[in-house]
Amino acid sequence: MVRFPYSGEQIRAMVATEKHPRDWETLAFKKSGERSRRCESLLVRADGKYDRIRLIVCAGRVDDPHSFKASLLLEDTRVRGIDYHAVARRRYYKEVIPKGWHEDIEDPNRSPGEKGHHDPVALPDFEPLDLLDFLRKVCKHWNIELPLESEMLI
Image (tube, rainbow, N blue to C red; front, top):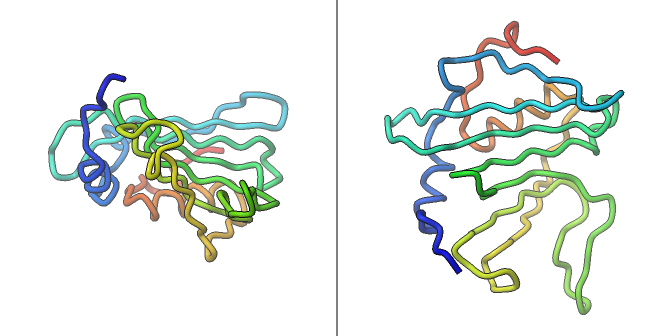
């Protein structure tokens, strides 16, 4: 297995560092189906360190907040995700994915199935009203500063 170039600690530091869209570009949701939308943006760290960080936000159905999901990619590898599950998922009577909104904390340095590779953490106070509210909450959670709201297009 090829080692990921960032340690778990470096990934946590990158998530905690303030970031913003490259050149403060407009965040525009594009149609990816009749009722679905997708937004993707390259991010720049406020501390000046260069990493290839991307934010991807998808809406399966614009009118259904439970169909929304977001991913934070580092060097084209998913390191964080936020999505919704209507039912908790269990394995051998142990809850492995909580019911409701949760954040997936992923460490690509660990093998699939290894403890710490994929840890879902419940987000009990995370309840978006619409797609723009979801984007705002995701960005606040991952320390991403957004351009002015008038520049965000859905």
